[in-house]
Length: 212
Image (cartoon, rainbow, N blue to C red; front, side, top):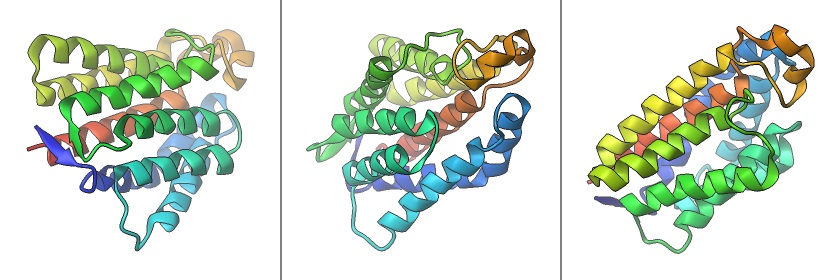
């Protein structure tokens, strides 16, 4: 199964939409143990991406590169570099690929996670987006190796992503601003994990829609 790099630009448009639609939700979650501006900043970044790609004939490689560059340069705090690195990894995986195959999709997520490991000390259990990325990527690799069924694998990835996000409620933050709250951070869902889950699930859904 595969889709073209050109058709893959739909992934980028759907990423923009999911962040814009959840702007308030992400800020509300962030407000419990953070600055309350996660949704505002993420929506600002993805709206800038939308303006940049509007009316242009671009493929998935182009779109992921624009997301990476925009988030790195235009979003404050730690999220800009983190998400910029994630999408840079994804861009590297699809660069010079005319077709986006099952294997390329898996590689997108692996390279995204590899890039995070290079710039962040966060580990599973620290109440960060790694608590979503780690189980999602592990499931992708494990299930695809076992079944070679990309649709099943992407559905399992979505499930792991959502479960990872929800699991952050019971964690104590060990990295970032929320870590200053100590035990008071327990009981609140992590905003970065939430946006990461939304993005991963959107990519999985769009890939399944495009694959044929």
